[in-house]
Image 1 (cartoon, rainbow over the protein chains, first blue to last red):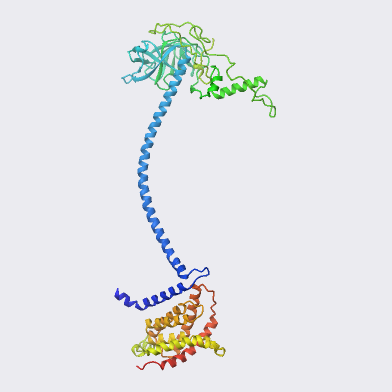
Image 2: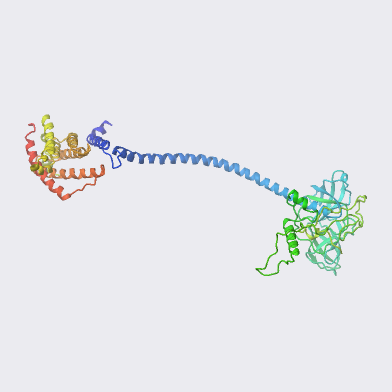
Length: 405
Length: 179
């Protein structure tokens, strides 16, 4: 160090003297804004260094902060991933719950609409065998279930009770090879016998080759087997193979399409008419109507319910009728009807439909009980009238109360 | 550089280091500064204001003493004194310029023979130009003054100061202590 200073002593002294005089100048001189040069020089000399230092400090602290944040982000990511998985499972569970609720809702609607006396039950177990086509329901003899009672869903028949225990019952599905039921086609009323095959499809036997059965046609229960009441949907024809003396007809059971969770056990069956119109492929279940204001509920008659859109359409029709206006007629510019006039609430003047009781059932319902299902209760309870089941426009035709035939 | 050339330009450094009495080192710069500030007051001597006597004295002492530190301190002293006597001139402007002139003049005096009149003339001319140019740079850079630098005038005045300087140096040589 000393050698270095000795070597550069002259230049060092020169720089010191120059620097001292620079400071001297800086202290004396002010710029045009009356700021001393020493201040300007100091700021000019210091601020770039401060800027560099701040940049380095900010970058360093930012790096460490980002590192810490990334570290936390990794933990957050792991936690959020776990939460996402949990929510996915919860979502699946809730979807299942919604599906179950929809089915239960449809089941209730069907239960209210059908004339047969039914009891809802849940599938609680399946048969132990690999090819077992047997399920267990949570309703047994204690609830009035007896051997031989049919089991149905709004979509179609499911099977029949083969054993009734106090708290549960065993049901043979229609896909079981030993299952058999009398069926009739919807279009040409071709009668046959539905038999399970141990597969997803069932077979309709004893259909003469000269009878006309179409693919896509729906088979209904014929009531001939004295188990299933007439008029319950069975399934849709998927395959028709001509053969002699009987055709080979394969039917896809409609009651098993959506899986089995909740079913109805028909305690006392009532024959129903076979609808003219085949059921829609995808039945639409109506939810509960939207909540209404108390005063609105008071003004609403206990007539046919419907959606708000249905009520609005009905109201507009009434307005059009009151003003002799026909919707769809008249060109642009014609005077529209006055939608502000007072009209009776929708449904107040409509005919009450779909109501009846066991003795005086609505349209086409067979007032007399059909052949009582084997093993059914002997109690002559009135068939479910469906008094609270008002007509629902979007319910599939197969689930509508049958019309007169 | 040949051995002869080295001897011609550098010579025997020990023999060529000039020594001056302290009163000479003090009186001569003061006289030069006094000349710089006092003589131009007379109208008939106004042309003498173009003579940079403090600068010439600085160059002389720096060249003859052949000490960089001594040269820069001589320059700093004379420059600061010149600044202190100048109106509206911040202290340090001439100080910095004369410090650098003294340092570089001493550096040159270490390497070449400064006894020769031609060398003295050239060095005086060069350092005058360097002095003026450096002052212009500092005035613009440090003080932000928009001053002009007239090269032709500076060159002419440099020649004038060089002539005066060679003559002055001849008289100052008489004040050296005998070896």
